Image 1 (tube, rainbow, N blue to C red):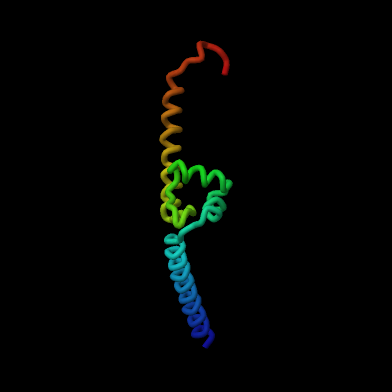
Image 2: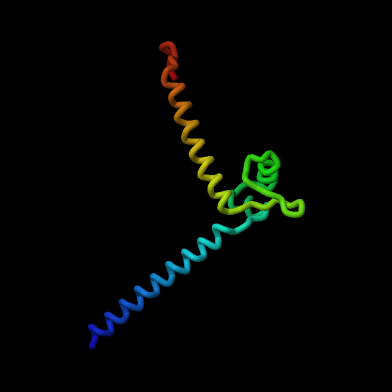
Length: 109
């Protein structure tokens, strides 16, 4: 009888895990399609509102206006973050390559 109870508990635990994972996946899908306000994207990026406003105005961050106020797609912002990270890696490698060939003429660094 105890073995049967343990099996039932294990099955219920598996169901709870799958249900929780499905709910989390659904929430993530809903969150990915979310539209941020300027305040929300500033908080998300951990920068000031003026920085976000300046980037949006200069078209350096994906944004659009609704009734004169800036809006930001979470999916676009997440892709932009990935692109910025990739660009930083490429720039870092180029700088490393450029400094490899430079000599300090025997001086100390």
